[in-house]
Image 1 (cartoon, rainbow, N blue to C red):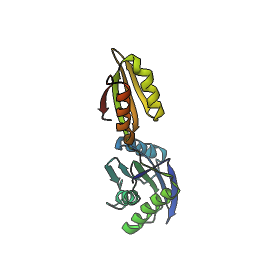
Image 2 (cartoon, helix red, strand yellow):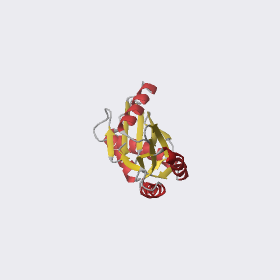
Image 3 (cartoon, rainbow, N blue to C red):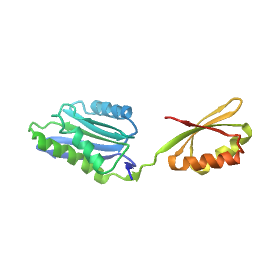
Image 4 (cartoon, rainbow, N blue to C red):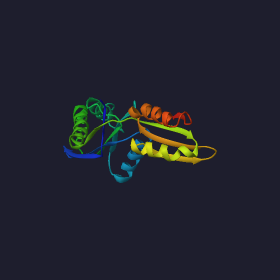
Length: 197
């Protein structure tokens, strides 16, 4: 079963005078990952490279950022895949120390930096979430909110019009049973739509 990380974890290695600063962290998409990388450049303006790898919901990225092709991003991505992780961004900031490491040395350095960070990371089972939207009469709003709270669903939005529209997010594994249970309680007066995030 794929896992993700509970929180960011860090590592730092010094290899032949080059400094490698690693971080692995939960990440949901490429745009968010790019924002983190941009922030790392601002935080480390003197760095030679900010290499990164992302596995998130079937999407992946492996960025060498100027290192010889295939010596940074791809090896970092393979570490994430090997540990069956998803929804994870790995970044390594490199300060060049003046000594070239060669292709094999670079692969080892980037792989080891990510692996060291993952050793201290707390891994948790990946729980896919599903967003649902329902329309219901005002009389059923309180009942629906209570039932949603009981299963730990997150209330994302509420709109009051002719009917009440609720948008909820809950673990995918619970969604079908939740919809069925509420539909029975509402005696057919609750209309459901699945929402694509």
